Image 1 (cartoon, rainbow, N blue to C red):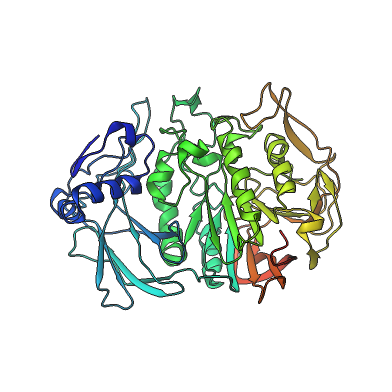
Image 2: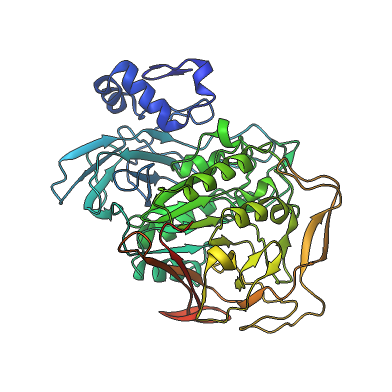
Length: 541
């Protein structure tokens, strides 16, 4: 593949991320020539054949929203991303995208963008333009638990306002993070949720899919190839980033996963727009079969983000697309984190589709539950967080499809013996789903007749996808709902680190409920509507 800075052999391109291409060019042609070229040629480092597109020139060099995410090592690496222009165009000129950074407002270091360009648009009928220019740079060699200042520019002359971030602490420590799903772009709900998240000062935030709702959620593919673009609105991404960036994501690492609405009429299983906007430390696609899965650790907690679209029985556009590779990778990651000496006590897994939900919309997904629940049981996964259902729900702990104990709000779970807790945190801003089946331990009572339902394949469920047709049938697992509430909300997780090997360590999970009415969030002073404490002995995994 030819780039403005040199050639990358085609045999390497197919298995390389954007960052790996940049590193290859730096090593082969030397950093000086690559970065000098970035300033002269009007783009930064090279990208793959699906990503490469030089921006059309215009007079504007203004930056727009900024957002960040940890690199492969959260203690020493940070991705900085920003955009310019809008989806409807025209694309602005971005002649020299770069980040200046340092310990104070004098900065002292500069990093040119590893990528700068637009989302590649396939030649299909009705495909809208995507003229927003996205740029990103990976800052490396940072110090743990250190506050850094940064500013971004598209031309090296005009700079964004000074912004800060803090790297992860090294070793086990007390810390807080947040998780949420189904955010959307509403000033009355999506924006206040982001503001409340920021006010809690989490070390990072994890989004379990359905961010901007640019895509319709399904129906764009025939045998994995995009064939239509009905109701696809890329401008929603400009709105989404314009909401979360300024109030939260420019200073709080914003780790995002995909939902069904991220399957867009684009290449690479619909995810090339997502990976263009959100550089993260994704696992290699040749290993996972997916371009959008990742894992990272902070202290004694491991975070694994999966793609539930691979196994979903309800929404099957990408059914089995990883050919079992994602599940094999998941098993290896769980084994690695549960191995003696790993330093990991808690494992939190996030993905979009619900393993357990008693809501009348969507409900539970048996295509996922059948394949992954056994792995969660075997490796004692502490917490699984989903979205998809626009409401909050927590389960009692479950092993092998059986509730092991009833845990009211404020109770304690010992995952090593009690099993996995499942939480749906889909109240991030999109319109709420208020219908419920069956009984619960607290919160909203049933308002629909009948038991909870689950989507199941009539044929087989396996790591390579389901067969037959999907049916919404009675869920054989009963009495799993511990607390549920149809509201705009998210979860806050406070980790108490062990002081020594064998010491007690805990994770307090709280459902956060900002003041609201049926029209939106009315105040940013939140209350705790539900909580559960997960406890372990350090090293007992």
